[in-house]
Amino acid sequence: MPEPADPRFLDVLNQGHVDALRALGRTRRFAVGAPLFHEREPGEAVLVLTAGRVKLSCVTEGGREALLGIREPGDLIGEMSALDGGPRSATATALEPVEVIAVSREAFTAFLDRTPGVALVLARMIARRLRDADRKRIEFLAGDTVGRLCSRLVELADRFGESEGDGVHIELAITQEELAGWTGSSREAVIRALRTLRELGWIETRRRGVTLLEVERMRGRAV
Image 1 (cartoon, rainbow, N blue to C red):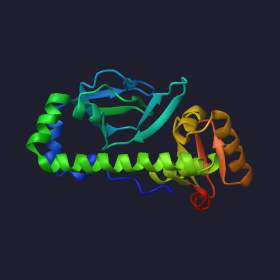
Image 2 (image 1 turned 180 degrees about the vertical axis):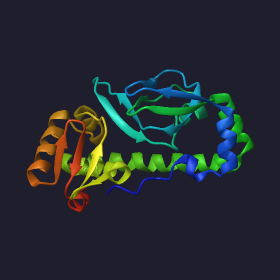
Image 3 (image 1 turned 90 degrees about the vertical axis):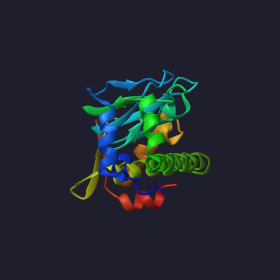
């Protein structure tokens, strides 16, 4: 079942730590569709998202793009590469006009050394993301495509949905291919699952979004 959204990284820090982190970086802006960084490139900076939303995706061995998650203002992006020195594990793409504070890897790790309280916040955030990844792997094994799709759509509605008439509307530039990767399904299976949900009267789809008309029924159907 989808769980409540985790608190944003910046929201958990006190104002002094937020100001200190901002002072370490420089502001960068990205247009819609622009990559913030690419999978497998060196992780030279941590990005603190201050405006707009970003999708994280990777390319599977079969050449499919799989959506891994969506980050919003207050979130931290690219922290894993900063911590272990490895390459980027995903591509980050702007879903909206985006603004970030880019902090070099060296400055960020030194900041964590000086502020153990912030390091603990980061450790807890990473632990939550690992738990979420484990939960999604269980869903892939245990649920059908309709159930997994309901899980992801309810998660998006809880995090980003806006009330619209009798439903909740989600407007994000996410493709059917990306939804397929996010649910561990084929694109054809996702298309069939969307058709099933439309026929049930639980959703309405548009070019750049979907409206959930029966959120609680979908929550109950979710894996």
